[in-house]
Figure 1 (tube, helix red, strand yellow):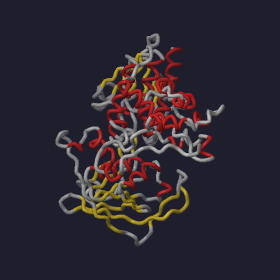
Figure 2 (figure 1 turned 90 degrees about the vertical axis):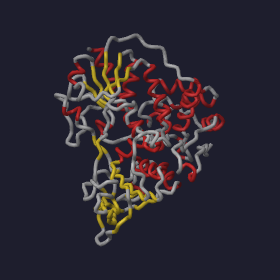
Figure 3 (figure 1 turned 180 degrees about the vertical axis):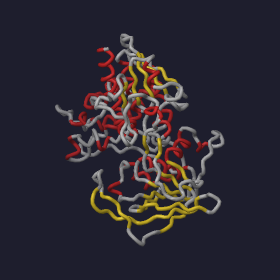
Figure 4 (figure 1 turned 135 degrees about the vertical axis):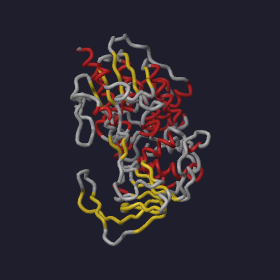
Length: 457
């Protein structure tokens, strides 16, 4: 009862040379065995830890009985993107963390089981639920990332006519341009997007709101607007040398690798500098993704430089472990102070200083301080800055009455209502960089609020 089923994985030495998915998924036998561990609690804590309110005990029970069709139907009542969540949601700090079994041993592998039934359905063929009675109301959703897709799916199931406006040439937002193929295959994202379209949602690509139309202009055609524009504006270190050739923001690097398939150059005409010695600055999931992509592109050595210790790293423990297994090096308690070039505008070194931790800062983590006299250089020809992102200011700048914080995030209530009537927002555009599942939870809350607003209207 206390031992979890082990997820089959690609061998680290093999997977470090390809972009195929690392985790191979449970077999039917493993899925059934794992669900038999579930206690079917009368007051399931796991549901309290799920931002999109999936009825976890219900779908686990169906799996234990071998009824995978009913299991996926149970999930999709609340979650339109189960194959995505089963791969990238940090279940270990949410539903699985509060699982009763976690107090005595290992919690149920809820995320991996969600992935299992989602993959089962995709291979069998996805069916959309019966269309509801049309409400006669129209909603515009700006952005097709996790928040936008979730809000659109829920609103469509409520009977509203929904149109998504996506700025890029492929739908999915950060799911498409930000998360590598080996963690979230694009085939999975496309399948989830197709399911949302089967619900009746229309998606317009290459449509930059703030350019082709403003939010105010959308309100003349639609009854409500949801803003799920994410946080795609990269942050930088503001140190000398960041403009040298060979320095990327993680945003640009991952977009070139994922959405534009630069790892398949010249079949996809999107070149990227494939460094031999790569330094990635940052300690989150994006830093892990960047480092592991650089390794797969052919780097001889990839080093993650992070100014705090491993315990303070915001990346998922699983991603850190996988990076280590693949040979990524970690230089902790280390902070960049300057990027050095060769006189021809190409990177040759990054100069760093050792750090030590003192009192916690506003985030509750120990504040890193420089240790005098510990300056040193790391040889590198590519530097990737992965220290966070902020929202693009285009939509707030072109929308009258939409208030933002000093950090550029949209001011919104718990239900997503903004300072502009009829306009709701959720996800990274409101919170700043966060998780996929938190953005989905925000999309779900906003969909409910929009439905109430439209029916009252």
